[in-house]
Image 1 (cartoon, one colour):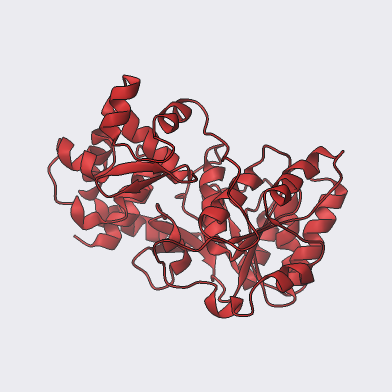
Image 2 (tube, helix red, strand yellow):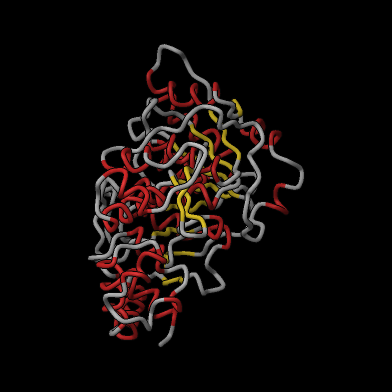
Amino acid sequence: MDERDVLIALNQKRNLSRAAVCRLGLDVSTWRDAKRGDRGLAEHLGVPLAQLDKALAATARAPQVASAEERAAAEQGCRVLTRLDDEYPSALGDLSLPPPVLYCRGSLPDGPALGIVGSRRASSEGLRIADLFAAGLAARGVVVVSGFAVGVDQKAHRAAVEVGGKTVAVHGCGLDIDYPRGSKSLSRAIAASGASITEFPFGSEPRAWHFPVRNRVIAALSAGVLVAQAKQRSGSLITARLALELGRDVFAVPGSIFEPLSMGGNGLIADGAAAVMSPDDVLDHLSLGWQATLFPEPSAGAPQAPGASTSSPPRLPDGAGRKVYGAIPDRGAATAEDIAGALGLAVDQVLATLLELELQGYVLRQPGPVYVRALR
């Protein structure tokens, strides 16, 4: 059975969680020939048994599903890239749970890249900031990466295109979905000299949980992330936190202490992010070898980004995730069984929550398997 076909069929399976898809996509050969009901294997892989069984069911028609998905991609003017393909960006290997499949319209540009993110409801000043930095950096050959949302994201993409630069849009839905509505012309312009990408299969409507998942790809593809304008609780700050975990630089534009949309950036600066007021400030901050070392081969233990600090505690996850996260010792590790026993929960329920926490960047899975907090 072709492993590439299995990855595409796995990624397309709608009744699998995104976290389970990414976990199982790391090493298909470990489980694809297993029998259903193997609880020991499921716990070894770090996925709920029901999710493993659904993945095994998906392998039965993997060649047919993969072929259909490739045809659909061609009809949409896209390509399907798997982790096994040369064009798949090696920078995503820095993620603990990289997407096993990307859908790509256009061509992923080579060269240095910077993520520019910010509020969907940006003020006129925030939009001017996005325009200034994206145009200034794109004109110098920097690839602008953002999330294609209204507000700062689309302003950054558009500014890069208008100066003849390159940009990559990371979508939180299928590439066949017109979202944000009315954005098809911008999407075409991006693909003409850059790329629109997503890990979500065709037909995937935008969902709230898609966007934190998308943010990790923005962070990984970029040598650094610039927050143009954001509130204190913002998806942009999730992207910045993920960038820090990956050893990327984090930049923020300072703003008025009386402006709520400046509080996110000001908070990052207080925590050690580099304050920047022009594109030249970004370029001056980065090392001289930036272009040559932007996307090194994935390695364990990425260095801490200069000019950034993780001394302040991370924002805690919500809901059940908060309880599971809290059951992991601050300076230690715990197994899924330890956590389940402490909380009085089923191991499968704990494994599912741990998967989501890992995908969101809150925990790391280590050999054993045991789990530790990602930021300590």
